[in-house]
Picture 1: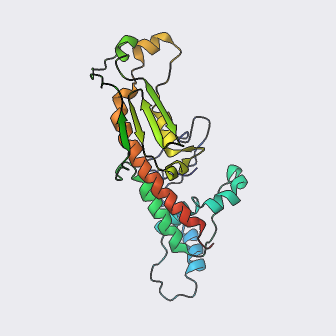
Picture 2 (picture 1 turned 180 degrees about the vertical axis):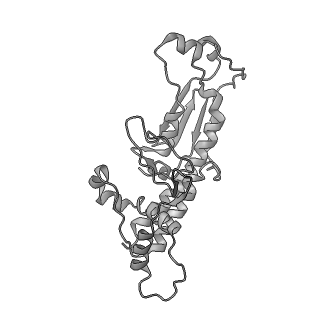
Picture 3 (picture 1 turned 45 degrees about the horizontal axis):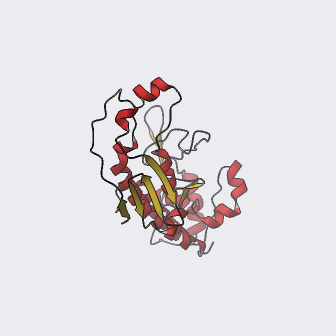
Length: 250
């Protein structure tokens, strides 16, 4: 998988059993000197490939554009399928496609979507409520199971066939478009990844479970609903771009 971030993640960003490789746009040396991670050599290679024989190109290739180009290529479904085995054990090698700026523009559009997912306009999913709404109660450290029983039972499951996400025993979202499930982070869709992150985990130690495990999905429910709607928008728009890549010249 590949994802753009605005902050440096930990090594297990993609999961507890996997290691992430982080490719920052820039880095800092020990003396606080800022270093561009797209090297002068790389810039020269791209210019030789795409600006050869041109006196003054209308859009001069920049290091920022190369960064976007790479992000676009790493989302190319043809590239990912063709080199699937290599990508499992080797560092990606970036090809020179026919139209540099088409792939750079796709990469920038994807990067803007993936970094700005929290601010994108939410997709209009239908919210379905069943049963009376429970009265909100303050959540204090040390509350036991009896206090937590007031909240609806968390479910956090997705049904791709019906385009439905069941959040808890009271609330569900419907109208998730089919293509939204096709944007995946690893082997799960982005929507399913969110649902897994917000599940309540059962702690083995009874004391920790009763006295110190304070997380409740109910406390984050509205935030999760908003996030799911926004990520649905991101997923749909990502799939549109990726589908366009399938028909591109290479």
